[in-house]
Length: 125
Image 1 (cartoon, rainbow, N blue to C red):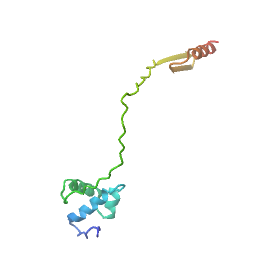
Image 2: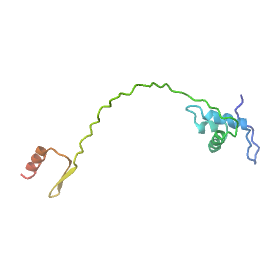
Image 3: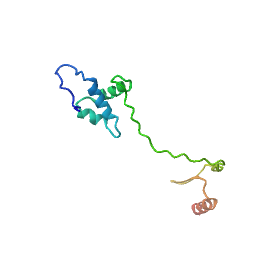
Image 4: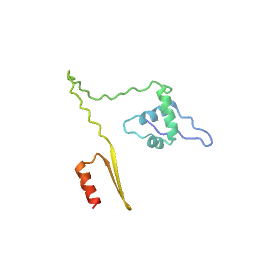
């Protein structure tokens, strides 16, 4: 099967046969195929190939090839009693800012009270 582009006539837009368009489009529909690379291989613009793909899906080049790949599926029995989902407690968000001279200490979140007491004792000495 020859998938090379027909010879172009200079100064005119090429009029590619439907079979050629179909072959190019079907090559782009293969898993892992790159439209850009396939367009370059056939010496056509990638945007043109994208237009052909749309036309192909509309059935303008004949019946659309319906090759589907099925993946294995396993159906499992769902438990009749679902475990209760424990909602995490919403943490209160706080911020402590201590400014001393040119230094600023910022504590965000929910700090441990003993840690805050220790930091303040050290700063206030």
